Image (tube, rainbow, N blue to C red; front, side):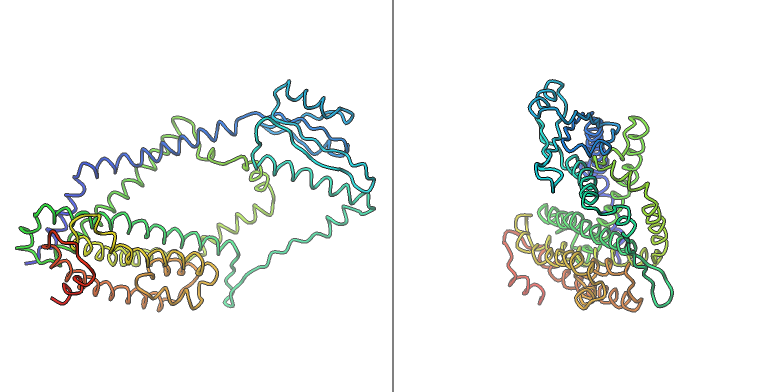
Length: 438
């Protein structure tokens, strides 16, 4: 008799009715949203801090460079002000700092040095903003004094954007590559985390039943392979349920946070927000944004979604069977460490190959080979597909993955069948090999 549906139902209900599972399902989004709210609030406080910067410019050419913003005010001191006097003035007013541009005694140079005096260390964004303002102005002034027409130089500057197009006439761009990389990276990382979290849940479930001796009663009427598959599928469904609740509840909480407390996720931006806003006002940047939207809709979305579902499920089931086998072979979680490395290493290797190889050459030999190896293909192939992988390669890769899963289930069931009833002895790889031969 096929008891698999009953086992799946039992595993699923046992997981979702567990008190710790329920608590973590509902508390985790609250914790995450609370952390986001705290970071947003602190960022808002930091960005709303008013700063007054006094500028002592002995060169006399930077008077029109420093423009006040919402939270930064510039005060220009007269060029004949003594440096020590300026320092005392700034300290007495408790201003944020003093920017000092020293005039050069050498007629061939405009300035001698640029210094910033303050009681507290200024942020990198503030210093970078000041440096950018000064560099452009002093550079132009140096050219003018050298008899160079700055307007002609600016007119001669040329920005080249190479248009990309396939031989079939399909237009692409660098933004396409960024979007493809983002999708592939997100898909691979999601699979990696799902395997780690819920694979360990399956392993712990097997160990708990084994140590409580309940398994001796269950195994008398259920085939080991049915019990193992029931645990894998039941726990997977519980994981999907938990993930769905996290997504829905997290979205609701974020919406409530922004509506009730007036905290916007935009507050998470650092002081570079000013630079970003200026960049968005650039017509070229607006064109890039439009091109990004076009690139998104040019992605093979249907292929991406279908491939993600197949490789995600196939990869998870493959590794889950190994986690179940490890759980059956040991009596406690401490003894699992010797068997976890061979399981984790292919996943880590797949992530590294995806990051350092697929990005650079998605159709190269290394990327292609690893996208067919079943223990790395779920991650690597998902990262390659956005860059355009022939359907036959996707089908072949998934076929190899499915075949390996069937073999792994048989392999894991052999260990599961014997190990599930073994107690009080720490198994070795040699003993696992003997169990497989039984």
